Length: 79
Image (tube, rainbow, N blue to C red):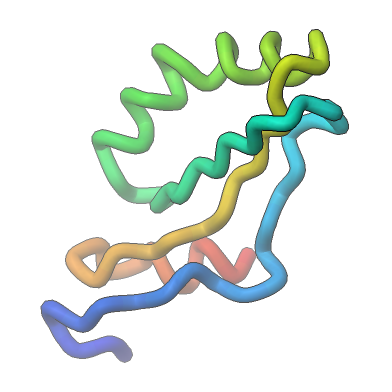
């Protein structure tokens, strides 16, 4: 269990490359599976970034960043 208000670092070796883009710009999304804001971003913006990555203009990756206020986030991030 993780104490409330504890800062949690991104989980190591959990980077998911969402593209094989060769763009000089790397966009790294830090997200929590239980975060409403992360879900809204995914719904509204992630497809645009994926298309940009597929075109080669950026490299797009996602890192799991479980937030302490979401009780299952760490377990969910581990898969």
